[in-house]
View (cartoon, helix red, strand yellow):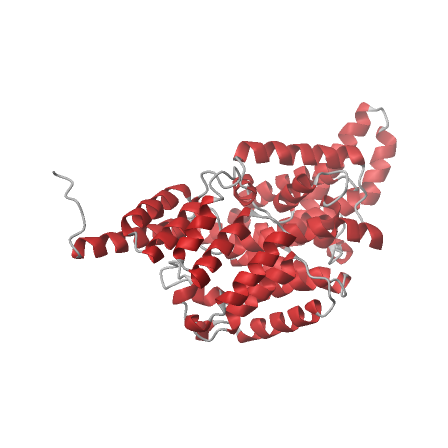
Length: 426
């Protein structure tokens, strides 16, 4: 299979997967079996499309193939129960027609999000399952987001599927009260999908624009569904204010460009304006949540025309409030950086030491990367090089790995020029 065609088809199938799953699950009212049927349809597409070409209506093609798989399964199951006549009649009425596309509900993917947030699941299991079936993330990527081993995450997703199956959750948009109960899980899933799209944790690409755009699209859908919820607006604002920097984040060879080195004239002014407008309206409601606070931090960065103009005191205050609203080790890491920018690197390093015993960060590259950055600020280049290299060895993102090794090499070269290196031969 040609590499270019393979990349195109993978992108298309990833984009269509949640839409097709939503349509099939809604029709047959069996989420777990529908997911298996859609996976089989995806495999069939990957095998057939290189030979016969991508169909004019790829989504309809996938729905038809997956539906046939479901009908075959229904017939087989019902045959074992000696009800062949009944199932044949039902199967015929459910069989896909040429007008299958007209049956598509544009909110099927959003329904999937709310369905996976069902109270039959724990919050962590619901988020993991939704990232897998709606976001299309691999088990390894989801494990990275949760800071847990891949095997642990695989078991969690498997248990979540079984819980959905045994609970008999109907495929429909929940009633308003149910939406409110499930909303925190839905928003967290959208946040994680966007995060993986903005900084991919695995592979050769720093960004996965398809994931980031899908997260923004779905959050817009949620905003339409819940127009007065300040956290929905806050999350959409956060995504837009962050995504506005996307073009400036990578160089010509897709190398990582940190925030302090970015060409700010490349930032998307339209996304920034929309994000600030959304945030301003959300904050006026008086109820402030974690997504609004993160959006406010992003806004402070975006509003600085130069890196020197960044209001780090305001960012530090926002992180201190964010840590109280939503205790999170990654927020604590960012708080340490903000504290270092306001009070000096030694203060930041002191705060980092309080995180050394946090099992969620044990062995995670971000802790070493932040420590290396603060050690460099403090002038301890030898220790900074050490931690840059440790961080590079722990990340599974090639662009981040290259960036961290470049930082280590840069400091090593500086030391050599000052005559501070120790000859390895003596």
